[in-house]
Amino acid sequence: MKIKGLDFVAIDFETANHLQMACQVGITIVVDGEIKETITKLIQPPGNQYEAMFKGVHHITEEMTKGTRRV
Image (cartoon, rainbow, N blue to C red; front, side):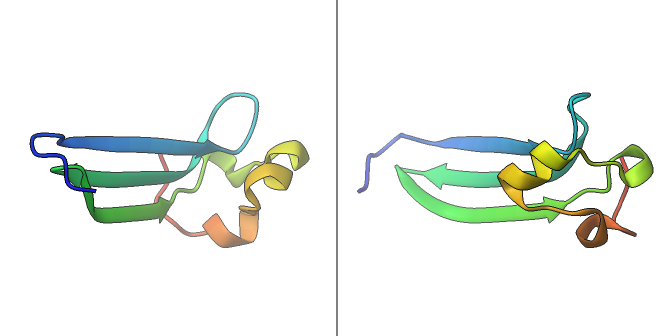
């Protein structure tokens, strides 16, 4: 649905543990109400440490982020 002038960028993070360390970032660019681009990147959290509860929510694991860029 086109809505002229409805332009924004949405950013979302997935976290690996209760310290809120990021393990994934998602960015979506919207222009005139239409999604123009979506980017997702995995991020290795410090120590590549995850808590089981968080992995159960987003299904991102240590194996998936091992060797990716650390924050």
